[in-house]
Amino acid sequence: MGNQSKTKDNFVAQAGILAAAGIISRIIGLLYKSPLVAVIGETGFGYYHAAYGYYTIVLLVSSYSIPSAISKLIAPKLAVREYRNAHRLFYCAMGYVLAVGLIASLFLFFCAEWFVEPMAVPVLRMFAPTIFIYGILGVLRGYFQAHRSMVQTSVSQIMEQFANAVVSIGGAWVLIQWGISKSFLANESPEIKSAVLGAMGSATGTGVGVLIGLLFMTWIYFLNRKMILRRVQKDNSERIDSYGSMIRSITMVVTPFIMSTAIYNLNSTVVNYLYTKLVPNLRGQDSVRQYTNYGTYGVSITMFNIPIAFATAMASAMIPSVAQASASGDVQMTKEKIHKAIKTTMILSIPAAVGLFVLAKPLIYILFPRSDEVVTLAARVLMVLAPAVVLYALSTLSNSILQGLGKVNVPVLNAGIALGVQTVVSLVLLIFTDIDLYGIAITNTLYAAIMCALNQYALRRAINYRQEWKTSFILPTIASLIMGIAARGAYELLLKAIKSPRIAVIPAVIFAVIVYFVILLSLKTLSEEELKDLPKGHVLVKIARKCRLI
View 1 (cartoon, one colour):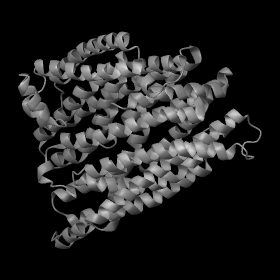
View 2 (cartoon, rainbow, N blue to C red):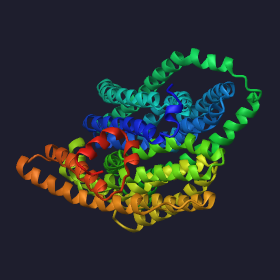
View 3 (cartoon, rainbow, N blue to C red):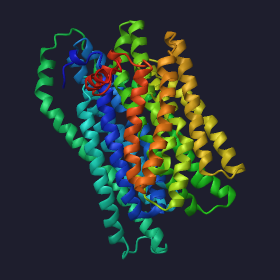
């Protein structure tokens, strides 16, 4: 499981492992979306994306936050060598998710028609069993994360996404071929029938991917089971917590985690409902056209979510680390950990936002080679979304910091306030203006901005924390803006020479990364120790020394 002593303070490196897996998983997700859309069409992708949004919210309410919550509960027990209590918590958590996951799966299956229009109901039902499986997988991931070991979770994420990609495309094609001659949706046009069947096949891929991840994590657990039980048997702790108290602890911790994560991510589901159901009914718009447009928005969001991977990974790595520092009463160490996490996240998130803005169209085109009209619209929406990369990264991280500090209810309240404001503004923009998808992108950014402001205020009140601005925000922004100009210039020059946007964008991105880190180090934004904490930090330090940048 990894040596805890070696990873005691290196949560940035652990976050890097998770982030690498997250980015690889999202790249796989991007690569398979293009052939998937080619198989099921824009309308089919719209049905899939709409059903996926509601599946996600039920998953959030039932199981999604389980890894973070379980790691927060078990990590303090491991820190004081209460191995028996840690393992009993693991068993209690497994019982909890089996019960909650079963209820959530049945609810989604039998109540699917409450959420989506009739054509998307069978798609949503295909997602239902995945919720039950995910809860078990979440407990196993949380257990290993509590041991400060992120490799198992990282490998399972990559395996999950790879299986998802293969089965989604294959399942969509098989269902379309099988269903064309059947009586399924006999009254619908062949195009709509193929779109629904294809979306159902893609939803199957999600379930198979989670199942593969679960089988891998189960195998890893049984490989370590003898060592785990040996530690439990040698545990001489006098305090043995009762199962009843553990169930109460799990409920008290998991519930706020789930509510915070659910409300935090509910904004996409609310926007989905407003755009595909409520507003079309109020304005007399064609629902099929709305779902097709929403599929285009899904392309932009898929690209947008890639750079959020590091912030999500940092948040997962931060929870047990901050929880232990806070429990020990060491306020200074807690502040240092928070500062390091925020600074590292901003150093990676700010250039990612600028990069998405200046290279939006070629980046989308390389992964989603649709018609120029679709790519142009998706690129423009992505440009509007780009600033939200920084805001979402910061708010995701601050959510987990507050949870690690024990302020588990604060993110719930803040997310509720932000969601309320976003919903009202979204309705106004969608009903009284014609900016369409741009309105959704604007309110998405507004939501993240409100969350950032409220969470930072809560952090200040909790431990009187004030973020340093110069090296965390100002210098990375300056370096990112210069990088953005260099990236766009390099892309345009290469495009004139190569005449292929797909080929020209790749060296432009590589050049942009080099320019950014050269400027960042030239501005003395990172110390040598901070550079070492980054993924492959020792390699970066050697390169920087040879280039006389440090």
